[in-house]
Length: 70
Figure 1: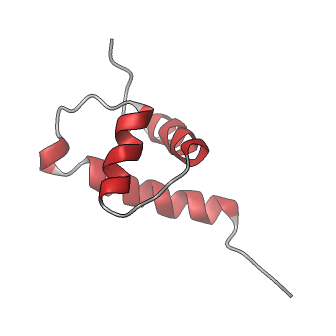
Figure 2: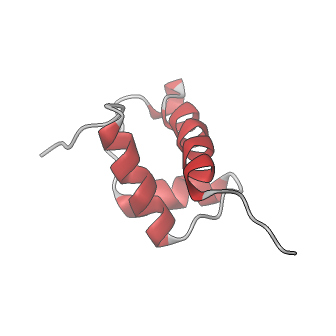
């Protein structure tokens, strides 16, 4: 019988991974967009889809890790 990781476990794991990356000193004070985050993660071998990046962005906001800038 096929199986897969539960979505909430996947999301928690990937949120932790993305958080550790965007908090690296080389990214401090960087203003992110959905596309720039997707590109930066892709550059290091993390090939997330646009819907996945959008979901991670929402979770980063909910967790108080990022805030919107004007």
